[in-house]
Length: 313
Image (cartoon, rainbow, N blue to C red; front, side):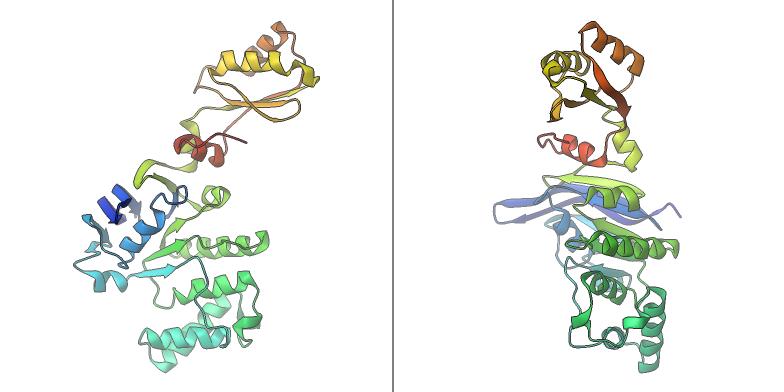
């Protein structure tokens, strides 16, 4: 179950003078969640559109379940689902009515469309609201309904393009639970998101995209390990800030970030630092610290480092 079901090799795509993709490569194993991260304009949505057969690449090729996304687009469409950034459901219909309508659009018989709608509503916790107009649904309920419309034909691969944009924490958690259920059943999910905690919690592997290329791949832990530990220091006296900053600069080779009065943070080079040694260096400089700790970096910090954005915490 580790053979790739989504493969992209050397994808290029331009819109006039704008190069959206510049040789993007991607490989996603079956039955996993791949999180695709990148700044705005990095090429994430363009890559998804090509993989979902909505746009053709200028160069390179891609396959879904072994089928070429350009030459065998019909075969690919039989095996994928796509949920965009905004719920694409009819507000005037009920939840049940929407699912039945989509079932018929997918050429299911009336009986099968009704059966599948009832099955999905129960599985994803929408039975109580099934016969209410979607106009009265919360944002999270609409997104869940939009998500399950993509599941009527049981896709092998589901593309989720920023599925929790604008949702409150409870609704985001409900979508995360739904995604986990899908993967447990064998669906492969390719997830683009700007919420780094979302990728950290859901993704088996992450691909970081910038300027139209994949610049880093790995599990969340593997990516965090590439930039070393993070050192956080809280000072007893904020007046000691210059001396503490000098110590941290000597250790890390870069200026620390001052997150608030008396608190400094800096990324350390990978390996070779012990907490006792750091405390000793602060003592030698006459710096009294209320707290000194080494921690793994967050995915946000990894993202900022990899995409060359100004680092902050």
